[in-house]
Image (tube, rainbow, N blue to C red; front, side, top):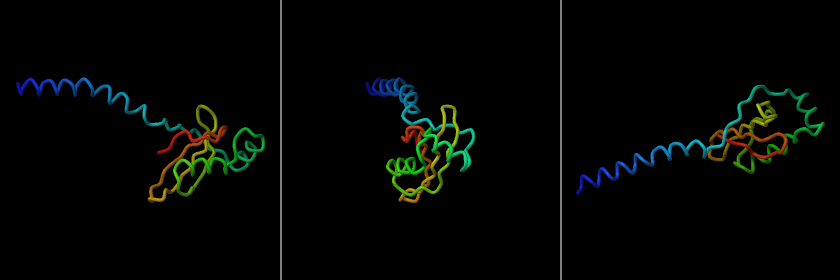
Length: 111
């Protein structure tokens, strides 16, 4: 009887393992792949034309999502448009990267 119990438990674990591993990557937001960043002149043009939110809006969104202090912010291109890539220092001392959609000002992902 004990052997049957061990086999049953092993079969259950084997049956659940693919479902757990398949669902794990979906839980993490996709980090955008950046293809190049704009210089200060290009950023001013994009903001003035109202194609993107200002850097201040992006920094507020990042701070609201993670807390901590922004160390660096860049406006970069990716496959779907422009993204603010913000490097922040959290209160616990960890450095994180936050990605904010430049058109909407909403946090897309962080890591």
